Image (cartoon, rainbow, N blue to C red; front, side, top):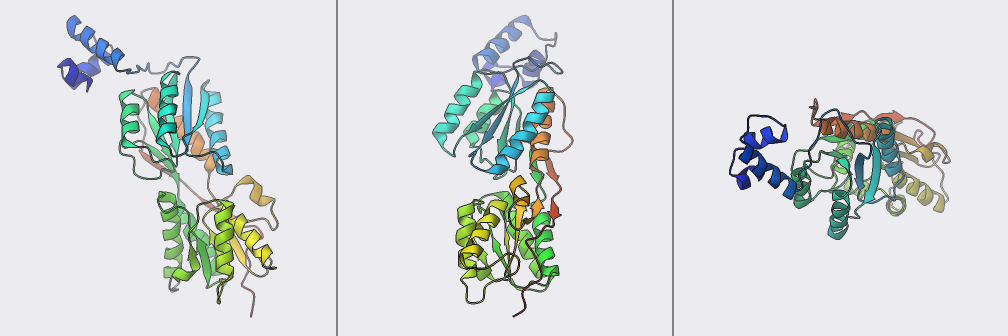
Length: 328
């Protein structure tokens, strides 16, 4: 856009931005004026002002896994002398606009979005401001092809399902996450793939929708336990939903894992202290935050990154919430 308004080529604008001397004085002045007018931010590789910040943006902040990501980002930011600003845009256009207005007034080095669907106008504005953007566990494909950090959701879900199959379970209930999220779809696919590989037909009656929060896990668990032929195990696509299942099991006078096995996904800190401690898939949330922060700072320094998409490995953590199915 700057090149078009100035009536010059894109390489000429690039030479002005990079301080090259091979640009006519009049052209340089015209381009400089346009860069200033349109709020373009220059970046000096290897140098960071003492007031530099990373903006970390969530849809909401009411989940324990958000704390883990914040912890990872803050560890890297603190070590580099960079501050962190945490915001929640609550999926509302007005909140996103307010955040953008506030962000323009501070020394932001880059932006990390977590499970957010960033609207095209917002992405375009961040691109215009020359701000690097990294997506953590993105809801969808980034239109600007921003770097993304995720986890091996499909492999983790496959491993959890295979673990239950290995214990002897054949009727395994599944509580899914929000269908619009890529991670939810991958976890569903991993569950289905494990059953298919074991020669077990996927029973849609054993699949229930959820939203990653306790309440949906409780509701879905209650429905699954109320079936005429209930599952002997339930795999919930988040730890919070798994804990909701715990409550549904308790309300029916049953016990985990004596009457039904439960497996979660995330490995939040509190699940090792619940009763019984939850078997789950560890998602490296803090490490994802750390890598996102390092990537933003590298881009802000003008460095190139090796891959635009990184997936960190998940891991099955076996505790006490799953056992072989109870014999009839």
